[in-house]
Length: 321
Image (cartoon, rainbow, N blue to C red; front, side, top):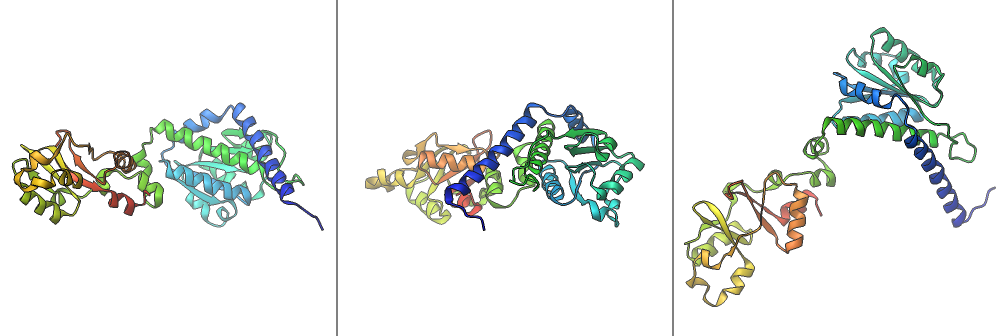
């Protein structure tokens, strides 16, 4: 029975990571010649990018497919074994196939190879064996560098799967950047969780015009306080000819408490208030509030006319904390 210590476990973990890191570095220093042509073929594809594999390569294929799909390239995973039992119908002319096999001799890929050849569907192969059956059949050959597996036996797929995953990510990001994929498009495919919240825009989270606590600059403070209380944002916006020229906060009320009701809203307001545009990311609104120690921002159009308001509580509810 083997023995171990905390330090020996740390040493093993570090060895594995160093082994895989060296392999990824070697791949980065010598990308396959077909990398750019393969990326261009993906960009030209009118249908979907289909990922195929089995076993560990199947798991890697699923992840790469998900990355393509979430970054603007329609994609799906087809299990190599299931393809022979009806799922070949998921691979259509107009699609492109990326098949992954470390050895390039995976038997279950045979029907996929025949299918893409029959219907002239472009095939990108990822394998470490350049002369394998899969690589000979491919239109684009992405050969992985020779690298030892990270396990002590040299048998468990570790380094090889890391290389395939990294190369797939590289393809997906190259295609994503070539498409000019934007943050707002990214959010379309990531609406949930903290990532979705960070990619939300102010317009998607703000309260609309009906909720705005607005008063004219000439409004007596007694009436202004009623508006502030009714709208419950803790601030009021002050308008002159429809343009936001000031904001009244709780701090402004405290500074003028002695003769508050003797003043108009325009006299109490802080001039040139901080505002935000509707297309700004909500995360930036959160940063602005934190930097200036405020809890709400008026949202204005290009003419400084208020169209909404966003409160710190809206950002917290959306998951930006």
